[in-house]
Image 1 (cartoon, one colour):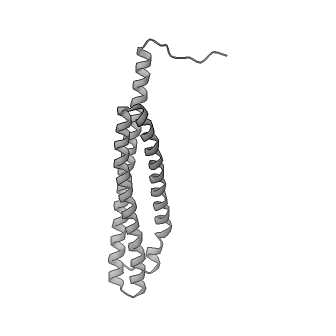
Image 2 (image 1 turned 90 degrees about the vertical axis):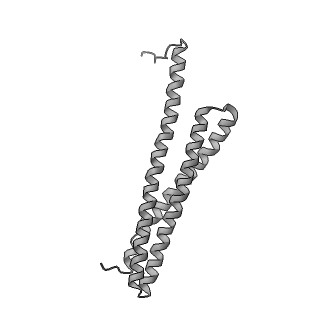
Image 3 (image 1 turned 180 degrees about the vertical axis):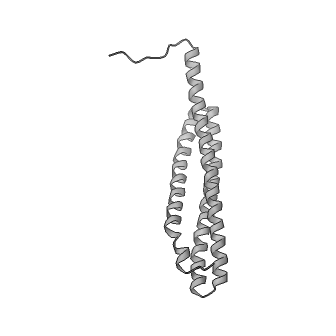
Length: 147
């Protein structure tokens, strides 16, 4: 297989967007952690603790996604340098390693999304339980008025 100097460079737009998306996910989680912490301090709700535990796992995964994704980007730059220096075999090997790092990063991203769905299900379960308790308490559901 023939790899030129431009082959690793083709990944830069995708890598930049991927790392930006990871950073946005991290920032959204950081805000959610702060919100849940203040809510938990006032309510000491068990479902909030489940959310906090889920967020902790997600934060670790996102940190690792960013690290492996950055390593993949570093590998692409190194591969370009090696190809520029006429070290074709080494450049090919480093580029292959960076592609594997990107695959690992994407797999971690998928895992984090699955954990996120589980966290949303915790929220939905809590909402449904609240509604069941409210209805069991004898209150009738509020119906919209007819026009």
